[in-house]
Amino acid sequence: NNAASLIHSGAYKRILIVSSEIGSVSRDFDQPTSAVLIGDGAAAAVVEAAPEGSDSGWLGFSMQTWPEGAPYTEIRGGGTRRHPNSPEADRMDNLFQMDGPKVFRMALQKIPKMFTSFIESHEIDIDDIDLFIPHQASGHGLKSYERLGFPPEKIVNIINDYGNCIAASLPMALDCALKSQRIRRGDLIMLFGMGAGMSTAAALMRW
Image (cartoon, rainbow, N blue to C red; front, side, top):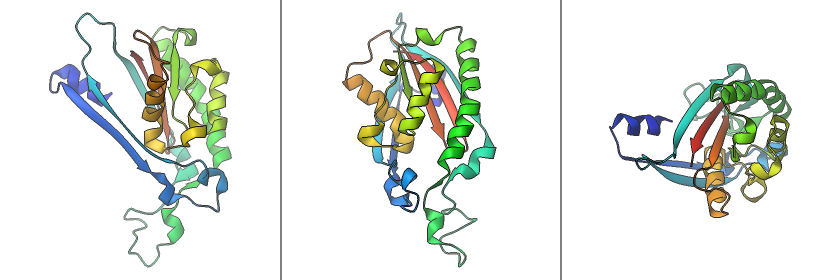
């Protein structure tokens, strides 16, 4: 969304966006349900203005954060509060901690309202969306999007192949959809990002 704004302003013609994660170094194997999900990955994309007269474009973006969910997914160390050189620092502070059931319950409570607001603001129906590309949080989480009205064939799901590659998972899913020819010129694509915080973001683009 920031890249699209900078290009629209005329400040830049092309912007390279890179997402890279090495989440495996922070896995806590005392929490096997989260440890087995985390993968390493990277993806990159070049963003530029669509040709004049083209229907392709960035159509909209929305982001929300619910800070009460911050303790549910976190790495407590690495900053000044629990600095690695502090005598009070513990090795566990540098490992990823997640309360999966609480995250899932919060997502079920918050996300549907956000979806409804985003869809209505663009005056479209879920049936109008050709492909839905979400953050690859978990198999259970990806399955839940069917409750919002997306049929399985419209949801890009790569969790079984790559795991949750954190910030890289959504652009990796986009690349996999392109390589498998699931995206055609003119398709309406919805991206949905999710992260610790709890933060979520939705974006709509015409390919």
